[in-house]
Image (cartoon, rainbow, N blue to C red; front, side, top):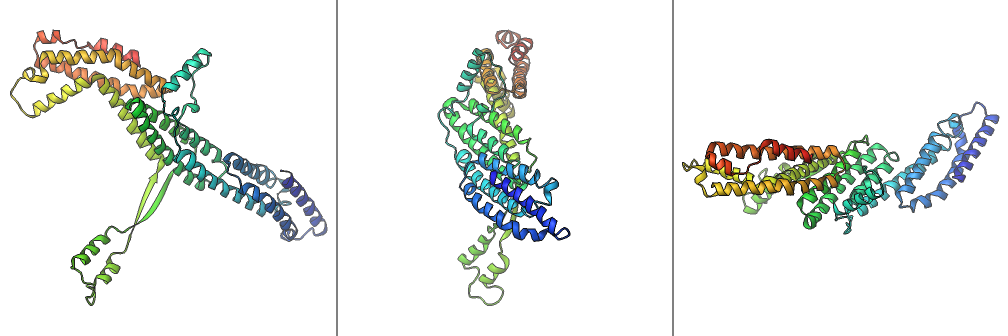
Amino acid sequence: GTPSAYLIQLTQMEYQLFRYFFPSSDCEALKLVITPLCTILYEIVRPYFIAMYDITSLCSIVSILKAEILDEQFGSEKGEALSAMRPVIEEILADVQERLVYSMQHYIRDEIAYYTPTKEDLTFGESKEEEDKEKEKNGEQKAADFTNLYPAVQNTLLCLSKTYSCLELKTFGGLAQEVIQYCTDSCIVASQEIAKASGLLMSQLFLIKNLLALREQLSLFDVDFGSQETELDFSHMRDHLRRILRGESSLFALGASNAVFQLIGNARPRISKTHFDSKRELEKKLKVACESYIMGVTKLSVEPMLSFITKVTTTRVASTKKALKDHAFATPSKLIEIVTTVNTALEDTLPKAIGKMKKCLDSTNTQLVLFKPIKSNIAEAHGQIAHLLESEYDSETIKMVPLMPPPKLMAILDSLS
């Protein structure tokens, strides 16, 4: 601001005057004059930024100090003239960065780790559908929009993007590792609430959408999201204490068999080191959510077939000599009922589920990645039923069972992708 600009100008004038009278002297002597002036500036501005909590304002101050003063002014030809001023400016910068870290920790705690979702935050899918209809009405094109993400994820991305260039990479990495862990946990808690209100599949889509967006944005930051934690392990000391309590080791024995000496000598705590990578943990949880969703939609479509195949496998393991069609679960009428239920699901339930997925997930690539294994699972279930019909049932039963022909099945599945 104006005070720092005035001080820079004053320092340059003092330097010129110093060089005029002492052309060959060391500039260190100039610090005796400039440092008290800079200290006055420091004492004036420090109370202002120490009282700040707003991350945006603190990031702006850091950017000004780094780019406009240290890089632009001190990095130019004027660098030598302003060298006496640099230590105080660097001290101000360090204090502002320290305040920024403190404010970030408060922000992470309040807006991410302990974020309390509103009713609107948990109406996942419904609000998205209404927004899409509104955009279509106004002629707007559908695009990737971070405002549709869960607020804790929005806050995380905002926090990281603003502070990335304002902190040392090591400091930023430590905070980033913490915020990603809290954000992931916050999304999981919210998904559990969504599952209660809208069902398990919608909660899984919520997790996939938010964790995927978080992972994609993290690739923009060139930083290590891992940390090594060191702990003292006292678990092995329980054996020594049990021996003392049972009377197997005496507290009053003389020599090396004394319980206290054994406890001190042999039961020193062990140092345990573990490496924790919050980005890798995020990817694990994203993978679990995707696999759960794929299996959920598969069961929604062909659950009766999967249950039937499981019973057939159990019967064969039992090595029963009874023909499959003679079992109560595998009579022709039961098989007709199973296949009819699956056909209805493929023509009604599955398209609705895939329609919801497309509404919730903007990325066509993500939709295809999720639907491909679902398609494969459904086709495989039909293939196994077809094989059982051919090997275990007569031609009359095969004609009666309305199993969907492969071309028709593929046509239905292809229409959904």
